[in-house]
Image (cartoon, rainbow, N blue to C red):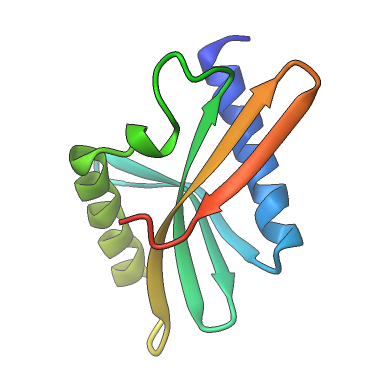
Amino acid sequence: MLKKALGAKGERLAADFLSRQGYEIIAKNFRYERGEIDIIAKKGELISFCEVKTRTSSAYGSGEDAVNSRKQKQIRKVAEGFISERAFAGYDFRFDVVVVEVRRNETKIRMIENAF
């Protein structure tokens, strides 16, 4: 599967997963300056900035390992842009990683809350 198509599939699966967990998806692929956040979701008074990592194998490491300090810094900057553009006074904010593992006939999704 092509990398871009795999990533898009993973983001769709992650959004469905979050919805089933009671989150309301408020933005997908939110861009600010040179960065992007895959999914921004709301649950109660919490805003979750989610980075989605989709894997078909562990050959290149785990999904959460791919969210290095450089990527974290970029996500934080985009989150600041999102917050400045929208009114979310009184909300808590969290950075999560959603790992989607797609292998043959099996798909596993896990969410790492407060990943960084």
